[in-house]
Length: 143
Image 1: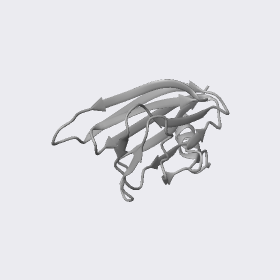
Image 2: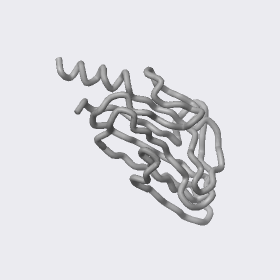
Image 3: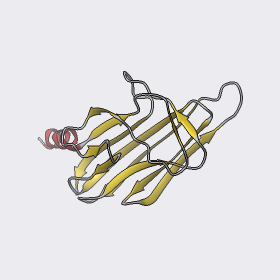
Image 4: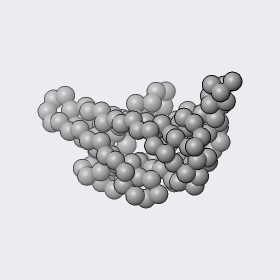
């Protein structure tokens, strides 16, 4: 019974959004993941590119940036405070790179999460049918 309840919580309050077309971002830009795969409670808002926590608990946060120009570099911000960063860079003929990260963090009702480009101008790959560059948050269990 507990497993069913936890799955219900994740399904209700989680989200997955991704980039729908190749887009260039400069350092400090908030990355707008503009295609929503699922977001049943509406906790992720495209206009602000922000996820707002609806219940206190532990959350799985999964971010991936697929770069087409050799730089993939982002920071995760919670309540506008920088929490973590993932970065990769390469130059040359095969300059596609992926920066990804997965965290489990305790979050409180009203906390906000967003992803920002760090350093460098980067062109991130997006495609309407598949989440190459994405942002996902899933509640694991309430606190």
